[in-house]
Each structure stands twice: as C-alpha cells, then as structure tokens.
Image 1: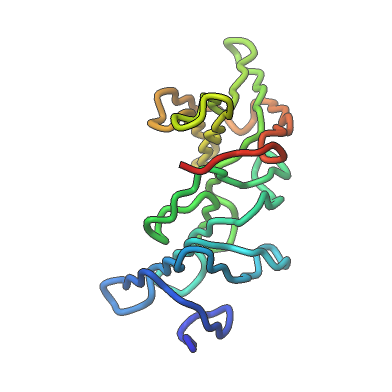
Image 2 (image 1 turned 120 degrees about the vertical axis):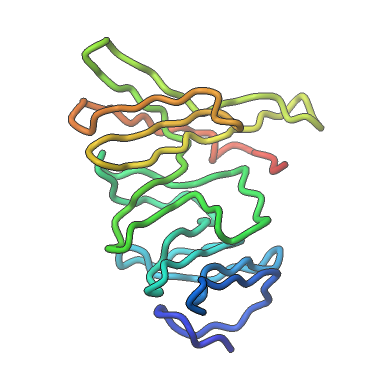
Length: 185
C-alpha cells in the first residue's frame, strides 16, 4: 500500500514510478487496465494510465478514463484524450498549476474564436485508423492557459498552433467523437 501521496492510500499495480530530485514522487504509471480514483474539483475522477505530481505533492496532471468536465478560464470544458497511450505517467491530458487550477487540457471540443482578424474555427483532427480504414481516430486539441492567453495546438504532431487572448470570445461546441467507437493506437 502506497501512503506517500496527499490524496490518500491505494493499492494497485504500477508499471512505472519516478521521483523528483528531492525524493518526492513525480509520477505513477499504472499497469495496463489499472485505474484509480482521485478528487478533482471536489469530484471523484477515475484516472489511468498516469498521474503526475508537483514537488509539493499536489496533482500536476492526470489521464481521465472518460471525458471529465472541468472549469477552465474559458468556462466548463470536457477533458479527454481517446488516443492516450500511457507509456509514462508524466504526459497526461488534464494539467493543473500548483494551486489546483486547470493549466491545460486535451479536449474533443470544437472552438470558435472571434479575434481582431476574424472568426477562427479549430477542430480536433480526424483521420482514418491506420489498421482499419472504416474507423476514424480523433486526436484532441491540446489547450494550455498561460499569462492571459491560450495556446491551442492541433494534430498528433501539433502541425497547427495558434495563440488566443483569453479576452477573445470563444464558443465551445461539444464534439461527439468520444460517444462514437474510437480506436486507440
């Protein structure tokens, strides 16, 4: 039973454990098909395959097992990455600052932003599954909030990146991809 974490005790199989230079736990990578419940915003959330921590033990990032609603500087959004691989517990789709506020997330939402240059529509990348052309893979937008701006990256290799001012009006359009059959690669 691991008791070194702020959010409680748990017992599960790990495939990886890393530490900060000072000896504090940096991340946990759960064994395939393992998951755990952590409290986020006062609500229990099932996470796996990974969870990462700041040096003070507060949660730095998690990989939700299903879409989870969170408060962001743009208002409520669903965080989820249907393509999460889980090689390491340090690279997760829902990220927090040391105060527990959302600092970034991956989302299947479609963003419509009105800027000084006009309206910008950003959608998650959809492409045929390389092993089954009849199915689509949906790679979420990666959104980071910092210094009054939002960086939105799109695509598996983030071939498109745009910076938006948080003061710009943004409309969030829910994406139904996570309700469809998706295939992890």
